[in-house]
Length: 264
Image 1 (cartoon, rainbow, N blue to C red):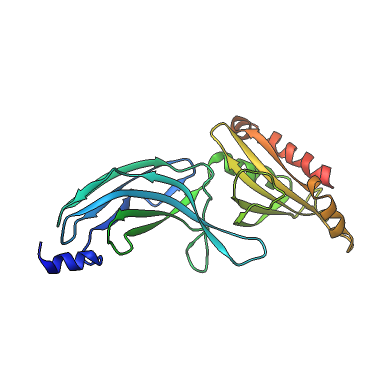
Image 2 (image 1 turned 30 degrees about the vertical axis):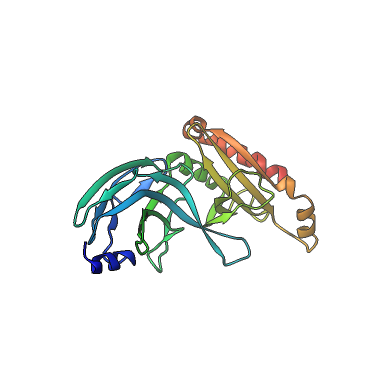
């Protein structure tokens, strides 16, 4: 190896390139994601200690414009190996997308997904300059997820907005963040009685837990004070078997109705 080649490699110039290629860019929660990582050798042999694929997203903080990067799942692709100068190497991979991965919605103005979900490919390559690759993907809801949202709609509740947020301290969960759905009444028994209901859906393989926050309509200035003193009655969680959600949506609506009625 010439002195010049040693020099440019030591500062990351001409080093190996890593590119992740997915078979598609849209997936359902819980689906298996397949793809291939292509490594192209640079001007000299290089040792690659490891390649990690990280499924990532962003979440916000209530009352703040701050956004936090978070890793949803990490998949280690390989053990240590050497990529030779000019060599091309392909490594296939496959891993399951976690069921609680946030679903994405397209912003009509920018065309970008909200919240963003992406695969970050990080290669542990000595002396490389930013050896990372980023691939954005679309996440669609499972049938269980959709059934829960529909169970709220049949109560006269309309979906207003969705955002990924750090979970409030008074919603007890092991999760750091969740995808919050806001629903407001447009007709039926809760019209002009309920302000909104916020829910977070955490699906598992067998059962699904829904965290909820119910806000009744405030009719006087003291209402907000009273609500703060009784927040434990407005917030909580309910767990359903996935089989029940899929086969008996009416019972899920009935349970939400009981929860809201207790608050009102």
